[in-house]
Length: 258
Image 1: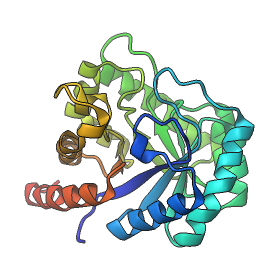
Image 2 (image 1 turned 180 degrees about the horizontal axis):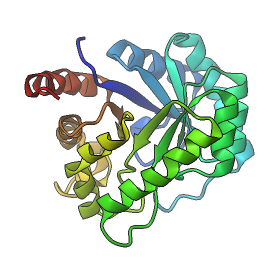
Image 3 (image 1 turned 30 degrees about the horizontal axis):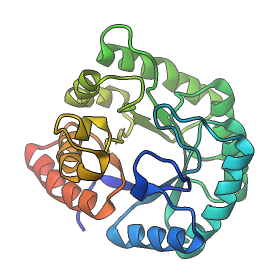
């Protein structure tokens, strides 16, 4: 389909991620899900092996690596040409995965550290930089300050391919999430692509009084708004619906001249 927005499909190798339909632990299920997401139009699969939902207790680094070792070969075998990103906050896990498989991006929801930055640079992978810090004052200004500080650190470490993630749902309340979405275009100041990871999160289901399982319609609406406000990547559970959303939202952006 003709669209400029790119889609990262979420595939979790976990038994406890917040949205049950994103959990895939059996080999056949992993293979079928990866193939389906590719057929539906995913540009990349974002693979997680350690839940970071609120209140969760992270598994050990060894368990996280073991899950990747069980799942990634199934994905790579079924979809050898599809880009993969690894959702991890641990440098040792990032180094292991990038050393063993072709990893396009390390998706680090922690907000990054010098050790992680150098690990990513050494691996040759790109990096998804997530704004995940406690908010003290104006969330948009603090997000801009965070990116202003971190991007030069990444460049200095040798990372060249960077995607910015505003971190919807991480250390932010509902109003702050919406404040960032409304002002998302300010991130164009950095000249880097922006990824919106809103799919089935609290800002999609709390306002409607529903649940993550019932929030596909509001997720579609939020993804369309994210594209209209400058997002170039969507990280989603529902690839087909996100692709269709991107097709029509991109048409509007083309008419607007964005």
